[in-house]
Image 1 (spheres, one colour):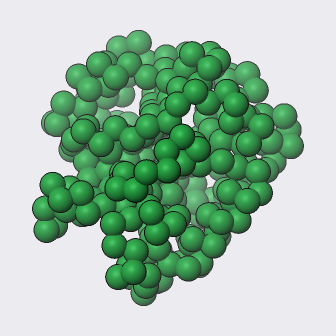
Image 2 (cartoon, rainbow, N blue to C red):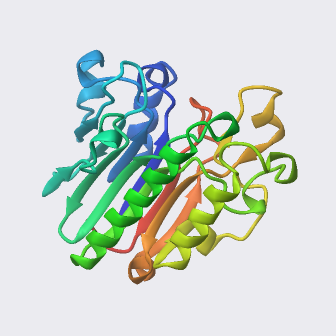
Image 3 (cartoon, rainbow, N blue to C red):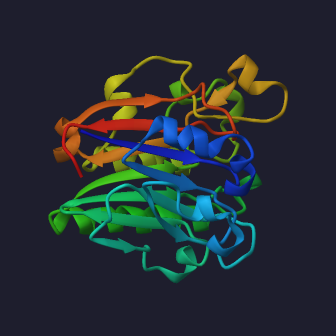
Length: 256
């Protein structure tokens, strides 16, 4: 069995002050994919750079204090790669760790921003990610695409779908990409196990949104459909605090 957790920490230095490391050791994942690190490794404490029992890998943005992804893993990967597309790698948006024939990807999809100001960039990233996943699958890999997709896929995935139809993260173009992605060989593991409403991974810091559970499900762990039988469970850890997102977790029937 392997436990893979994904979490947008909204600043790894900030979450360190909110019991991140005790949580990590208690949760004890085999792999932790992190998004929105907002830091370069040389800005971090020694324990964040190399937590006990873990190897750490980083994809940092060129711009200071912005974006960034990381992977903590107990087992040393065979290889670690960026996406290989400079406009996205410059923002530290993708990091992939390879274990045999399994690729675990930590991805921080762009926010399309107000009035879709960054929607073309977002959709270009989505297209590049689809291409990357397809290439890996065609090369014989199984993929676990973890991360903050910044998309609520269906009305069930946010508390107020009607009033958010023109808002970033629920734009028709974004939802259409998720439709395409999940119709072309990739499965949303959480929805495979749970069809219940009211399960979210992100809440605004305003209006006591988390307390009232007025949230969005925008963090996912998707796999190629051939790999789905190896996924034993997928859950949302919505009691874990420290960020405006909560972690998501999946259990694989096999070891990485």
